[in-house]
Image (cartoon, rainbow, N blue to C red; front, side, top):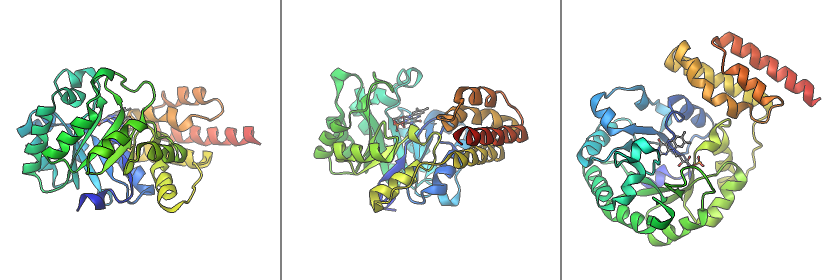
Length: 322
Ligand SMILES: Cc1cc2nc3c(=O)[nH]c(=O)nc-3n(C[C@H](O)[C@H](O)[C@H](O)COP(=O)(O)O)c2cc1C
């Protein structure tokens, strides 16, 4: 598929390690049939050792889907990308991850300090695959090293078909505010599609982000926590001027149950229950007594009991509202 076709909805799910797993991608896809899904970052070192991990799982309706690779060894990343073509519609290279253990190995955002190596990675991967290749990076490593325009041009020259840019520096990690206006500078200087990323959490912020950045679309990350329908709602608004209300309490409870059920199917009861715990705070955010709800939910070990508690929470919330 052409890159333009893969990006036609103007929305993508941003990669999030430990979050955008097979199940969450399926939940996002349940609403948005057309957004570009992205896997969690897949370490090329790890994939070289073990090929069939659950991290690569997909199902037939996940297309269009991009698989994100991290690493710093061009040939190793290229071999992994070649292997992943049997699952992926696009390959993305992580050049923005800020976490210490990643940048210390010259992966992720550290590649922004080594544009030559980053370009070599893009060239080598591009020569091994026949599907589009994208890069995801930040504004720069620090506020004094904002090289995103030259970096983007270099990636384009090396063969990248698409860019996602998180409008923060590596030093900001996830603090401060994403500077969407900076993205407009990149847009003026490259001619491949650019998706803006950072702090889009609603239809309103999506609209503002596009106005400020002049980007071709938006990658949404944390906004989908607690609301996997967000990308669909933004998509309907931007493409069809249709405003869909955020999920009701009842819909949220039903999504938590579905999320838990699917994680149990995917990972088994014990691991599935533990894995899903990290999502509860986002789902119950805004409920009356939210901290008590999540405090109890994260200690529970049995699916039926969790379901009963969720029903009780719903009943109590409805009573409080009335
Ligand atoms: C828990 C978590 C894990 C993340 N993992 C990845 C990753 O694997 N690859 C990547 O490129 N970015 C990763 N990111 C960054 C997001 O893709 C995104 O750039 C960032 O969260 C800003 O967008 P947002 O405000 O829409 O969340 C991660 C972010 C979070 C919060």
